Structure formats: C-alpha cells, structure tokens
Length: 532
Image 1 (cartoon, rainbow, N blue to C red):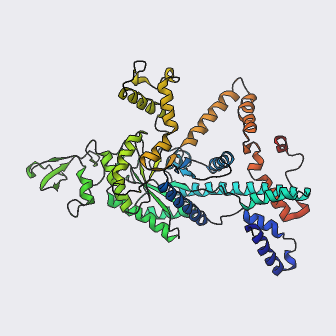
Image 2 (cartoon, rainbow, N blue to C red; image 1 turned 180 degrees about the vertical axis):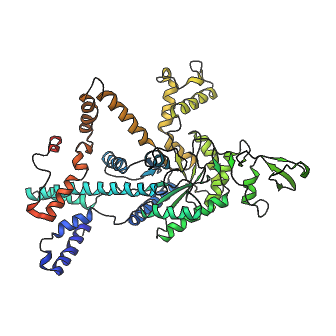
Image 3 (cartoon, rainbow, N blue to C red; image 1 turned 90 degrees about the vertical axis):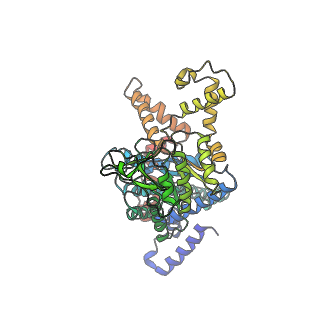
C-alpha cells in the first residue's frame, strides 16, 4: 500500500471520529497536502540529506567515478530552478547532485550591510537564513510538481482512463523530492568555539547536514583566493570541529558531516605561536614551519618573542601587524599536516584551497594524506576565481614542451588570446577542462566538486545581455527572442511564472477550503493558457 493511500485511510479514521464538523473535509485532499509537505522541520531535512551524503561517500569509496557535484546558489529561487532543471534533464533524478552555500555570495549578495568582501563581515545569521530559504523553495518545488500530478490524476479519472490513472499514480507514489544535501559554509566560525557551536545549531535546524569550516582566524578571515590569509594553530581549529560535532549530536543528527578546510597553501601568516607540550607534538610541528633565525640571548631586542627549538634560541619573523610568518615553500606540507590532523580530530571530509586547478598538485598533497588515512576524501572548489582557460592552456603548452612537440606557434605569456581559440592547444586544454572532475576524482581523491559562485556570474551575464538588447535597437524583441521564446523552446517551467509562484497550488487549496464557492485564478481569462 502506497504512503498516500495509507494517509487517506488514517485521515478517514480521524474524520469519522470527529463527526459532523468534519463532514466537508476530504481525506484525499488532506493526504495530498501531506504528500506535498514531506519534511515537517529542518531537522527532518538534515537527517534525510545526511543519510544521502553518507551513502554517497560509501559509494565513492568503492568506485571513484561516483563522485558528487554542486553549484553555489545565492537565493532560494536559484536553488529551486537548479533542481527543477536537474530533474528535467537527468531522468527525473537528483542522484549525487547537491547545493553549495557560499559564504562569499552571502557576503556579496545577502548582507543587510550591502555588498561586502568575503571577510566574515556579514551577519552571523545570514547563512542559516539562506539554508532555510533554499529548502523552502525546494519544498515548494515538490508541492508544485505533485500538485500538477494530482490535477492530471483528476483529469484521468474524469475521462475514465484507468491506464492513465495507474501511470500517474505510480509517478505520485515514486515521486523524487527536490530536497538534496546542502554543504553550508560557516567560514571560520565567526568567533570562538562557543559562537561556532551556536551558529552551527541554527544552520542544522534550518536543514544543513554538512558544514564546512576553515582554519583561518575568525576576525581577519579572507577569501580563499585573496592575499593576507592567516591560519590558527590546530588546537584552536579542532575545538571548533568538536563544537560542530556537538551541535550535530545535540540535535540528533549523529551522522552529520563536517568538512575541514585548510587555507595553508596560500596562507603565509599565523596569529599565534602554538603551545608545545612535548617535542614533536602537534604544536611543535606547527611552529617548525615558522620563519625563524637563531640568536643569542644578548641579541634579543625589547619586546622580542623568542622560543627554544632543539636547544637553540630562535626568533620568529614578526611583522609590524604582530603576525608571524611561515617559511616560503611550506604551504603544501602544511596542508598535508592540516588534513591528517583534521581527520584525527573528527572531520569527515577535507577541503584544500589551491591557487590553481592542477590535478598533479592536488594529487601530491592527497597522496601524503592517504598514506595515513587511505579513505580521505576531498571537497574541491572548482572556483570562478581561477582563469580556467588560461591555466589549462598553460598546462597544455607545458605538456607539449615535455613531449618534444613544436610550440613555436604559441606565446605562453599570451595564451588567453582569442587567436588561439581554434588551435590544437586550445582543443587539448578544453578537453582536460571537460574531464577535470572525473580525472581529479579518480586520481586525487575528490569526492565532491563544487563551483562556489557560478550563479553570481550567470545572473550578471544574462542581465547584461538583456539590458544591451532591450534598451538598444532590439527593444522588446531582445526579451521575446532571447528570453521568452527560448524558455518556451527549452521547456523552462518559469515561462508560466504564475504557476511557478504557486498560483495553481493556491487554486487547489481554495477548492479544498471553499468547495464550489472557490474563486480560482486559473480560468479561461488567465493568460498563462497562452503557453500551453
């Protein structure tokens, strides 16, 4: 017996017990509303999606071709349309396709202060608010899709078409939800471990099953692809990892996922010298990467900070800001150490922020991590901050040189030039970009590929094109030919924007609530009928 049939029967029992006051209640209508609202709370969503992610992680361990992907979405509507599109193009399924919630886009697009750089300056509650908003829109997508199926079922019943009724009922009974896991960016925790815990609870309660946190200082956090990044000792970072775990456990999401991000590859500074309890411990290794000089006690200046290393007095290089500097060329080694220690501290997934998309570089670091933790898995930022065309053309050029091929037709310093767009080098680079995710997942342990802020760029690009045409010579044709007509031809559901906004669902409810007295919007005069 299907779930909706069970619900109808249960509501029938409740209606019978209530007596005459419930005479106008239709159990099937109530069951339909229940089906359209699969998830009653954000915690229901968090548990459902955590189960999905854990199953996907296990599948990846068995077969690296089973990697997962996501796109960053800065608004509930954008996330909704992404999932509607995925279901449309991939056989009605959402398998291994998630949402990413970028702190960068929250700062740039969702802060009450206005557009901000990604420096943890936006409101602490804004990410949790966006998680809730995204899931509100995804749940509405469920309700809209099921509402359409219910109306089709009613039409088949009215026509007496039993076969069609069975087909539609099967779609209802096996409906695939638009709700998928969200990997949510908690930045550097916005304060101490207690602040991190409190914010984590809000995000989990909103539906997040996976939280990503980075090892930068909370008060001077920078975008991962900008300069001036400052890391913290492992003891500080791991306290926040434990805070996230406690938040998951308190709320009953025992299998919640923590992504530990290291920014050490591009971070040359630390705010603190780590505490050392014994030689060779975590703090000692952290300090071993500092840029120091050996001095005598007599050489100490007023206010100098010095410490003992292997029986010698050393002075770390300290900037006027009070920050301490790491040695050049230690970034990748620090990343490996960070990742090993993060897993030791309870992280489920890793994130290494790199300065370029280079599989060899990522693999080298992950090989070091996997010597200690063989099943270590990466979440990787396929960032729009990379010039993908330039990076991969450079890699293609270098590969041609290594293979002894003639590269005299190319200027490596100018490979972004459009004159190379139709060349062998360009084709080779583009093919490597196309297969980057599959190749990196196979060779470098990347379980999840995300693009942090693609919809920031798509919104800008599409708006530029529309503005240029609509306010120029094309006038109204700029909208009709390049927006509306394409929506119709491509089957974009939003061409019926009234339906997308919930008008038809509202009509269903009006009929449930008021019966034949319902004043519906979907009559013959509704211009949405022009798009049938």
